[in-house]
Amino acid sequence: MSPFLPRALPYLLAAGLLLLAPGCASIQSAISRPGFTKLSEPLVVLPAERLGNLLLVQAKWDRSGPYRFLIDTGSSATLVSPDFARRYGVSSSQPPAAPEVLIGTARGATRALPATTIKRIELGDARFDDVPALILDTEPISLALGVKVDGILGFPLFRETVLSLDYPAAQVQLARPTAGHGRPGTTIPFNNLRKIPAIPVRVGDASPLVLIDSGSDGPLSLNPVGLALNYAVSQRPGGVTATLTVDEPRTFARLDGAVHLGDIVLDRPIVQLTDGLSAIGGGVLQHFRVTFDQAHNEVTFFREQGGPVTMAPLRSPGLSFTNKGVYWQVAAVIPQSPAAASAIQKGDLVVRIDGEPINQWDRRRFDNLVASAREVTYTLQNGTRESHVTVATYELVP
Image (cartoon, rainbow, N blue to C red; front, top):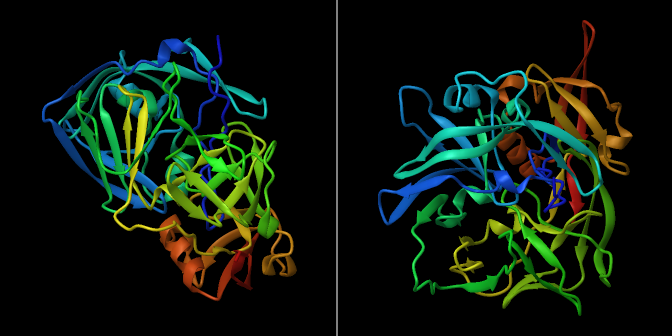
């Protein structure tokens, strides 16, 4: 087995929700092909659901479904739920001795997932047959996002198409590759044999490679090794997030200076500092229509509005949670936050927010609350006793 993309893929939820990340790192080349692809129309336009800075599409092609998929250009494989694999896998049920593929993260942790082949996936007038995939329990992702997620569509699935993620219009577009591929915007090549969407960006005098990762809800993630970074807002802890293999702490800062994507300027961006692969998440991609042309090894960023891209302060509840369905469990309390001075501790169970049962709160609603409210009241349950704790929200990174 030869690894080709060491990667930890956390979904970086600005509100601090914690969920399992489906990113892949070490994948056999045998599963990197997209299968057979057919577009019935020259341009297929799919309405997308925006959850934070993530794009999801729905599809239904038989009496089952509809199915909801996350588009993840940072994933080197397509992943599907066990139920979806049983329905559309090459056999009606997954055998106990199903082949497994080892995945890993940049931190060296590994996990094996069973492999399968999906007979078909239809997205509107686009059809993908014989799709290599890995089987992943997507329930933690569904719980965290507040909607049922049936799979994660990785970058290789779209190798025979031109894929556009239009964040402002909340659309996903699929087109046939053409010889004349000029399009408006800033075009940057990703010249590599594996067709991984990693591009150079300019940070000061350095030009690190960054992965374009639509499966991350976070901002620009930078590995500071070899970079002379200056900070307008110094590094500060931002809770934890989970990957397939390990819970990882997060550290955020605001740069004192610009990051350049070709001629696009990210002015004093908020960044997450990482010891893994640098990546551009949805916190940056949300400003653009991003078009991936794998036939020509290039990506194009288009934005109606000119001028530098600026980022608003990053607000936080001071807490990270694991969504357990009937309750949220506190996964971390951010040091030096208002929550750290409260009675809430790691491991506490939250059963209500602002007096409403936890099952009435999904990720999008909680994000909106943190973005607008000065404080949040949590109801904690300890056995048969309940207690109420009010905690101020704050700007984690001004």
